[in-house]
Length: 180
Image (cartoon, rainbow, N blue to C red; front, side, top):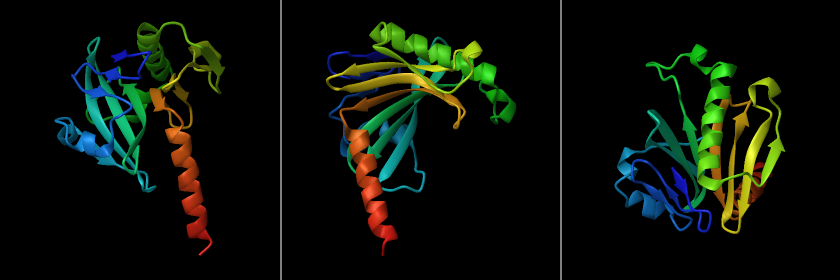
C-alpha cells in the first residue's frame, strides 16, 4: 500500500487507486465497483463500500470507502491476520487485535515515515493499544489505531474537512427531522 504524502493518492496492492478527486460516480464507473459490497449503518446519505484491497505480506487488506452523498469522505483499511470461515468470535482476541494494529502501524510508518503525533487512546498499554499514529497534510489526515468499542484496528484516511462537514450536515438534518 502506498500513500502519496503530497497528494493523498492511495495505491492498493490490487491496482485500485483512490485519490481525493474520486467521487461516487467515478467509483461506480471503475472496474472495482462490481467487486465491492455496499452496506450502511442506517444513516443515509452515508454509504459504505467494502472490497478486498489485495495481499500485503500474505494477508488480505480490506478497504472500506465511505461516501456522503456523492463525496468520498474517508477510506478505511483493516487486516485479518488469522481469517477463518466462518469468522469466529474467539478470532478477535485482544492479543490478535494488538498484532493487527502493529501490522497496520508498520504499513503507515513504511508509507509515511515517523508520525506527526502519537495520540493517546483508551486501550491496553502492555499491548500497544493505548495510542494512535497520526499524520496531518494539506490534503487531509491519516491515522492508525485501535477502536476498543468496535473491537478492531484500522487505518483511516480522510480528505480535508469532508468527514467533519458530512457529520455536521448529518446531525443538522437529523435534528430537523426529529423536530417534526
